[in-house]
Image (tube, rainbow, N blue to C red; front, top):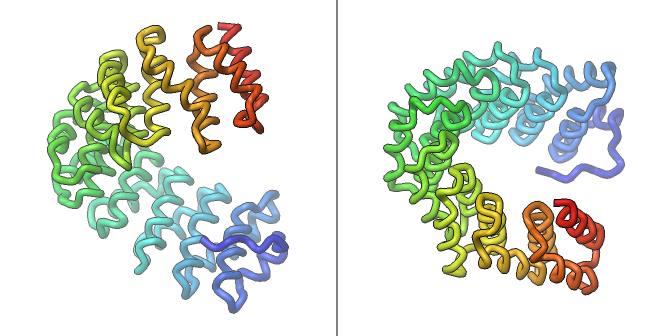
Length: 325
């Protein structure tokens, strides 16, 4: 996505959506999606509807997403036409936009995209259908699960079914815990965790130390409840995985079993001394949510250090939260 020109306001965007420079048209379309009042939204709608037919795919893609930002449900017909765009990014943007709008009239178009569209569209159609009409999505998603071989689409369908929350499909989803693609296995496990299905736990535990998917695996294990504490504790004991995943795992342990793990406590306290600001901020956030008196001394000392710069207010809030528990 191109950066917005800092000097472009709404009036300029309305003009520049027809610029001869594609980068300017992209930026203009993006700004038009932020239209404020009814008059602006009406003008933006017309301009963006026209832009979905732009010869450049990056303009069409941005126009689809901007139309969704306007929040007008009557945009669904325009966006549904874009599901058949020649460019994957544009048709995916159209599916995302339809999910954002949530117009139930668009459900048949998304269902058709899931059934007959290219794989790069089907994976997005699956999640957008649930946003539009979760109840009506169950049957076509289950049917698509049985007819799909693409790993990414399978994962998206599993996640969509998990989001609906009907556990009748759990056995079907569990079949993909042995899929050859690691991401599909993780998606299936995450979906099962939404049902509280313990069959997901081994797959989720195996994903904790990976470069991708570890954070989602922690969240899913936390969803499974106290039975996940030992797996999370074992993971922390290996000292493997990304820092943010280890911190999140420590927070999950303390959520599920507040007094059960010195290792979880020490992991969060050590996070206060991480080199990256974002990791220190995450550790502080988790401590604020879960820490007890055991963290007071360390937090107080951290608040006096240079590493707490820009986080002093958060330190005070964490100490207050602990004292109020």
